[in-house]
Amino acid sequence: MGYLKSVGTAVIYIGLFLAIITFIPGLPPDSEFREYSVVPSRDIDPKIGPKNRLTNAERLFEGKFTGPEAFAAYDGQLYTGVHGGYVLRIEEDDFVPIVKFGEKCGELCV
Image 1 (cartoon, one colour):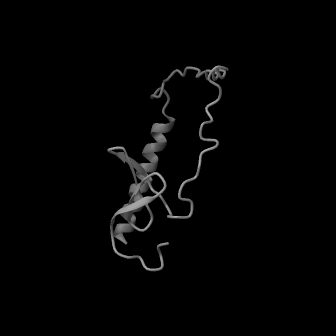
Image 2 (cartoon, one colour; image 1 turned 90 degrees about the horizontal axis):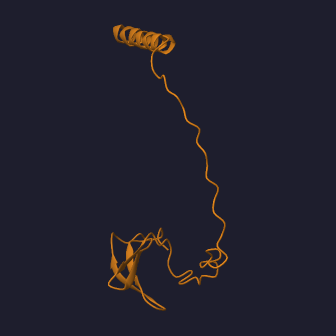
């Protein structure tokens, strides 16, 4: 019972302290604010055109493996980690498993 009384007293004192600080005039913040203006975007240069090179990108290895997490390039080769713990090296039209981390997942991995 003494513990609850001391916790309740502390909460009341902290609340009273915060209320006094909030309502005392003349304490900071005594700030002046500046207006923020947004610069309109530039027009698209007709010589360059819009950047839409990825619009007609070819999808590679669709349905072959799931969950490519990240891609990294090393010595001109492209590597990715996939769901199930495999690290794959992506070649022209194929992928080669390099290493597998962890144990076999059984039915959880595709």
